[in-house]
Image 1 (spheres, chains in turn yellow, brown, purple):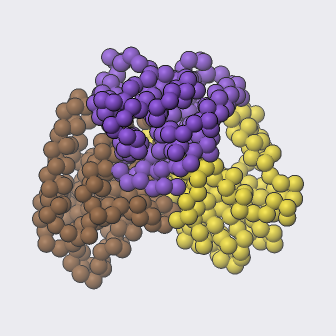
Image 2 (tube, each protein chain N blue to C red; image 1 turned 90 degrees about the vertical axis):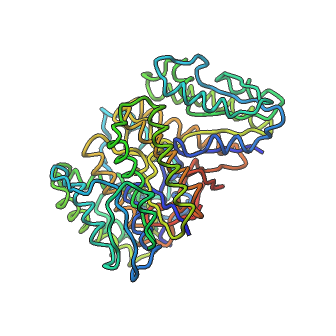
Length: 174
Length: 174
Length: 174
């Protein structure tokens, strides 16, 4: 089964996504965000720590935003989350200030590789954020991010068997 | 059938709304936004162009925010979107900085005309945005817009047979 | 029945929540926000007034953010809303600029008291906001609020029998 779990911040989506995988067997937990904790950002550090302490001992953490490589492992995979992946990719390719068309084509090529790797295997749970349900952000980076993540979510959803929306800890299968 | 399609930015709502209408027959596509492309805003121009290139050849585009007039055409109608309509109406009536009560009554009168025209006909698909699911916007214009669009969405929804929520390309009939 | 009603701004969630309670019997309407109208904020005043004029004559308004006390009344209770409650609690305890861990533990203790009082009674309708579905807010206060309210919503939802999501006036039981 390939499942995309989406929802807002602090909706319970990570917890739900983790519950879809076996707690007593090997699972590869893919964290696409920066591996190093940022001492200047205690909010972020505390959030990572809370997620970490919840993971079963039989799970292995893989910190990478090379998703086709992550999807090549034999064990079930959970990727948490696509928003962190998109941020890492925009950072690494210095795309925040590039022309929109260039950014769209870079992300598009990466996503094609991801969906190809995804179509070749089973047992993958994706976590993502819904960020497109507020007013237009005042900064270009915010508009860019929400547009791109909306497209990323649509494309990964299209390659999944199920999409779960989590609201206040309740799960709705779309 | 009268259907309101709602969802976040880049959720796939326009694509879904278009799929509800026949690709091989005459359909009036109503674009309530500014007809002239804004050379200073390449993001907006690119988005309009992507939407345009997807529309079937048998469809006619009508650029107007006079919705009762748009609803008077005999062919099936799709209006994309109510957020653009609200922006055009606030611009034209210079309502962004008016007292809230005046703005609410102008929009209310326009909406009454729209729902009256809507109740008299069939085959209308509306597209709108959900913009009320983030934190309070820091600017008055953002707060005004999200409050008004929430009310507009409720009123049009009440005059429709179905409301479809689109999340990551998946459709939920409410 | 204990029900949490959630949704975006101007989605129709208060109206739906009120419809879940009897219009012809005693109901305690709990308003956790500031009792005094703020003359400098006509938007807020107008919104409070519109809500007020809709309430049946048999209902009593209780303005307090002491929720365990509010839940001790014998009549059915509606609390509108948890976002206003969270704001009042952060204000009163001067927690907006405190370290995140202190804030989380103060709110956590208050919530424990609320859920204990909730588990001991029936006929409670909660209204809350979804605020976690936009891009990351630019201010720390916005990030703090959306993180905390997300957690509050999850915890109250876990203590309720039903969660209702309202979108454009339509209700989805989760």
